[in-house]
Every structure is written in C-alpha cells, then in structure tokens.
Image (cartoon, rainbow, N blue to C red; front, side):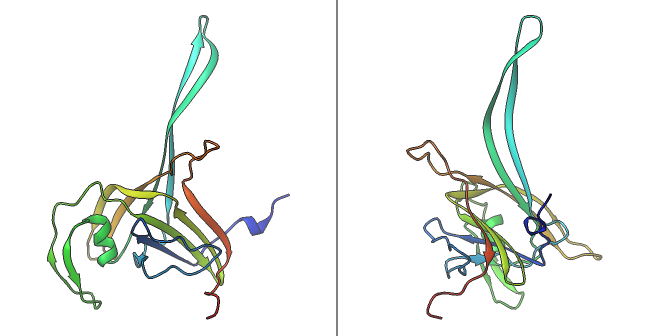
Length: 191
C-alpha cells in the first residue's frame, strides 16, 4: 500500500545561487543573505532532472551476457526563469557588468561569459509550511544556455541547464551530490 505523504504537488518553487563558501541552510532554516533568488520560474515546465550513466554490455562467445559496465555518472537540472535580474545574468553571463534598478530596468555591459564559473545552487518547492529543498554539496556549472523566448503571447523566458558536481570521495568512498531536506520550514532560533 502506498503513502500519499510521499507524493507531492507543489504550489511554489524557487532556485537560489550562491558563492562556493556560502553555508547550506539545514533543517528548513531560511537561506542566508549570500544566496540570490533567481526569481519567477515557469511552473508548467518545473524542474527537470536528468541522470546520465554510460553503460556497456560485455558478451562471451555465443552471445551470452557476462557483465555490464556502468560509468560516467552525471546529474543535470533544467529550469526556465521568467525574470531579467542579477541572479539570472550571473548564470547566463557570469562576469557581466549590468546594474539592475529593482524596478525592471537595467544597464551595462554583457561580456563573453566565463564558461567555467562555479557556484552553489539550491532548488526549493513549497506548499503551505512544507518545503522540499535540494542544495548542491559541492558546486554546479551552467551546462547549457538554451533558448531565450520573447514574443507577444507568453512571458519572456530563458532555458538554463546546470550540471551538479559531487564532492571528493570520503573515507568510505562516498561522493556527495546534494544536501536534501523535506519537512516544515523553520525560523531562525531566537527570532
């Protein structure tokens, strides 16, 4: 028998980015000031996670399967922001010199982006006081800057795909991709 508490439909979602040394909020605590919110997202498209693993089947004479190899593990997540803001430009054009006025206006120079820029990234979904959060344990990089769409019938949006890189292996040989939490949102202690 299944458990409906393990299935979720989320009312709200956010993506956050931060420098590599930013602390990861644990146990439902809010994000600190180091974390930039990407802003409004395309909720119909949501977050798309892709796990890629290369495999090869090895056969003995006579076509008998003897073993399979599995290697080159990769995790990517795709999302579509609607906003033109500093966080989106930090992802699309790291190293830009564009200033944003907070009222939808901006001005400055967009340089050829630093394609090796590294950052922490967090994905959060919420309904009421329940949240689900997945934060990169090591770092992420933009793997693909997809189509940007501007037209007369829908909101302008960009397609961004990030690759998430694991930590180095610990003493047990485990490499960590994400810190994850699903539970109640909590306030800072003492607030």
